[in-house]
Image 1 (cartoon, rainbow, N blue to C red):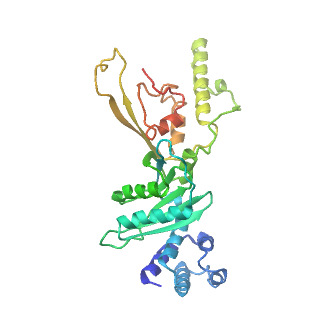
Image 2 (image 1 turned 180 degrees about the vertical axis):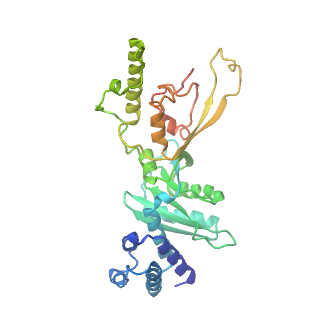
Image 3 (image 1 turned 30 degrees about the vertical axis):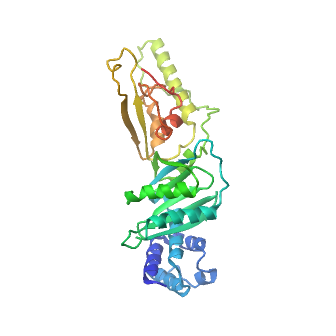
Length: 345
């Protein structure tokens, strides 16, 4: 076994917590059950790692074997990566071609290897017709860096791919090209969604959660939860405030539901708008363009809490007219269904 492969395997095993060691090694399926039984997992981790590396040397582990172990570790610890979403599309009237995973892998690898002399690509099939791809990038003059790879999760027969945030920004167009060609699509765009929680991104783009709110029966009526009202306040004002709070609660509940939201940390959309006649900017020929960014440790729960906290108005959260492209308006259309397509002041 090559020294670089041995070092790669050693570093990967060192990252694995002892509580997960046997589970991950069994999922790797490189070392047999009998070989694993010879390892004393109760001794110091350094000794365990050394024994495992020796077993790998006996079986002449390859670079691809080491890469598969790294993929499995990353699958278990996917929250340690920041994930972006890419959406692909076919040309107008283009039929959906039968998907062949073997052909996809071959085509994806060829695109990268034709563009870069030094690049290693590894695949691991998983459940739900998904394939995990690990790409170690090199240059025309340097070998692939196995310690700064990019990971891609692609679901066959869908237009979506999820990629880990890459430190090599210059390789993103090439990665998009490989995905587009291998999956037989015509266009690919990066969506304005980002999170450490891959499962939440999947739930959003595949719409695996239920947005339809059916019943909501709070144990305590909203009026009874209202506190701090002045005893001399007009009863009509008290009633109006209570009705408004209940309306906000109802609309928020109908919009977001009564369940935990998918966890994402970043989203944005672009706004392009022209002003109504009578506005001081109505004669402006060029539309007003702006980019609205959202960022939070738990973005959707934060958005959900804005209206009940009195920090935004329902249903008009924004007071402008606009047209939105499919990619940049994704969050807007998905999480602000109360707004009209072209809101105006």
